[in-house]
Amino acid sequence: MSKMPLFTLLNTNLRFYFQTKRFIVILPLYFFITLIFPILIIAGYISKPLDVYSFTSEGLNNFSNASALVAALFAGDAISKDFSREGFFTLTQPVKRLEIMLSRYLAGSIVTILTMFASYFIPWIIFSEAFYSSIDPNIGEIVLFAILFNLSLVAFAVLFSSLFRSSTIGIIITLLVIYLIMPAVTGILQFLGIEPWFLLTYAGSLIGNLGLKDYPPHIQTLSSQNSKFTIYNPYVWEASIIMVSYLVISLIISYFIYTRRELKEI
Image: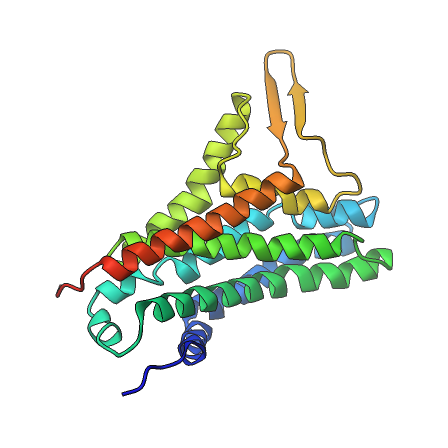
């Protein structure tokens, strides 16, 4: 038997993802959630932002957390399922594990990026044109970093998937870490006045900031009578390094674990 090329594996995984309930449910759900903000503006329940920059920034404000959830759902079991009973078919085929892992990573990345772009960017562009007859001139940078951020998220999800033999546990732990724990730790550290430079979700805040007319300063301090709260905004170069580091390191560790873990009957 000849080895299946990477694109064949990728095609198989893409068809699998597109047929899952995860994709069928989450794409229209995210699309509907994205429409709520502009619909409330049209209905007159909330005021329209002053300019296209404010509209863009508010629309992308939750992009980081939303992407984290999608990446966890689509890639949280990318590797772990091969060490369940399913692996007795997959890993006994004449296919290199590197090709299997890359096909899973690429398929998860494509589906995640497609979901986020279809549910966030397309409605945002349409309503930007409708409300302001223009779109944010930073669209190029925003799209570039949105893609890089999602590639990094999926790689990180694949890493967690490689650590567990159970697909369910892989997805749950990935969700907890990148959707709940990381944002919570970011908030706590900023409250303590510490820059969370080592967290991927911190780098993801760059995307919403790029929607603003003027990129916010690296350090902002909010004061009240009894407390002081420091907000850190990543530099563009800083966020780039964080994202690329997560992407590369996660895939290297995932490959190391995946190629050395033995298949055991459950």
